Every structure is written in C-alpha cells, then in structure tokens.
Image (cartoon, rainbow, N blue to C red; front, side, top):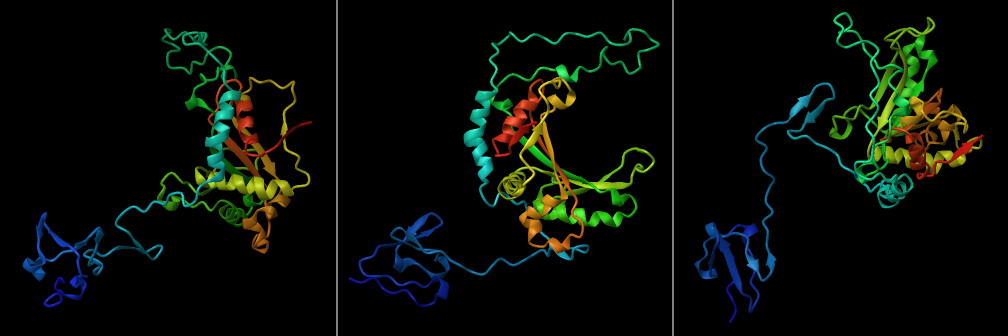
Length: 336
C-alpha cells in the first residue's frame, strides 16, 4: 500500500513526496504524530529514515543598523572580529616536534631539588637604617651583578623558545626632513604586513616611528623621529623567518653567517645573559625579499635593517641557548 502524497495547503518549503514502503515520523515539540493527523501549522522538518530535511528560509531581518566609521568610511560590526591562523606554520611545527626536544637535551643541567644555593647577600651602598640616607637610591656594592645571575632550573617550561623578532632601521636623513621616513615605513609594512591592532589583536603595535630620547652630539634631539621599528609575534614572526632563510640569506654572496664574538670575550656581560641574537642586513639585501622584489621602483631609497631574535633565555649561558635555537632555524654562525 502506498502512502499518500501530502501537497495541499502547505507552502513550497514544507512540501515533500513519500516513496512506497517508507516510514515517516514527525517531531513536533518532542511528540510523534502519524501523517494523517498532521496539519500544515504543526509541520516541521520531517525525518525520513536517517535523513533530515532542513528548512532554508530567508536571512533574519536586520533590526539594528551597523555603526559607521567616518574616518575609514566602513561599517563597524557589533561583535569583535579577530583573525586566527589561516595556514599551518611549518617552522612553528618544526620547533614543537623537533627543536624543543633537542634544545631540552642540549641545554639540560641536572640539579637535584634543594641543592641550588641561595644568592649571596651583598651589602648595600648606604645603611638602610640611617635616616639621612633612607630615601636615597641604594644599589648593592659592585653594581647589580646582572651578568652573574644564574639561569633558571631546567624544566620543560623554561626550554628556550622564540618570543618575538624585532626589526628596526635608522634613517639619518629624517633629522632634516620627516618625509624621508615614508620609504622605510612602506618597506617595513611590505616586509611584515603588520598594522596597528591588525586582525583585531589589541597587542599588535604595527610599524612604529622611533623618536630620539636624549640629545646626542647636538644632532639628535628628544622627540625627533629618527627611524622605524616593528615587533613580530606568532604566525607573522615565523612567516618572516621562513622568508629570511628561504629567499634572502641563500642569495647573499658576502653573508657566511652571524659573526660570533671571540673566545676570549667575557660571558658575564649584560648582553651575554640577555638571550638576544642580533645581526644586520645591508641595503643591497633588501631587494631579495619577495615583497620588495616585485616592485623595487616604489622604494627610491632602501635602508638596511637590524634584526633581533628575542628569546626567553635568561641568566648565565643564555646567549649560547639563543644561538642554538636560531641555528635550528637554518641561520648559520661563523667565528673569525
């Protein structure tokens, strides 16, 4: 016996056709009714076997108009729009799957619990009980001893990792004319793609203008623009690092690697315990970046840049840990 065809008194989006020997049940607020007791006002999406017929109606009516940004002439959405990673990062995955374990093994220093000695208390320069010197700046005798601070214990959380990459450039001609900063700003924007609060992230600073902090030799004054910088974190950091190691460094003839300090240099200087690896690229190397190479004529004067790899390594031996991490990303080192 064939089931009846239900077609009358129903809109087009609720009409369906029943095939022979097919069981039909309708779900209406948790109850099931046969087909002959169903009315059009009670009809919902039917379930035929395991398949469910969904209703595709019109979009909901907009009850509240979007705000309008008069500066950018664009609508402002009601919710905060935040971008996420749109593609997997090869270098980031390489760090978590390979480099992190290798660096933990290379830099591990076994210290049984309770064996680490507490730092030696160095007397202060002035007597803190003396009322005449109570409010003076009272540093310890011999300085802050920053270069002698021990490294934190070796744990999976303290494994050296890359926190950010900072790129900055100094433009001497900007002291006479601020317009000379336009080319470097455009270059850094093209290299990194960073904008202020880009992608809905409030911590993204974008390309920033560097201003002088104090007078130097009578030609740098406080508040005068002297250069530009940009901080890269997250996916944009690894994207720039990938471009640097795949396209730029292999095409430089005079670049054999980052020059290491001589063996006789001190390992207790503040720079040796900062965990930062720095090197520079000349203006001739800028044309090897794919973002600049496609339109070199748009940049009349390409300045050189300084690149700083900032890691979380601190204490004695932090510089060696940072170099081991950077070398894992295919950046060579050389000693002269």
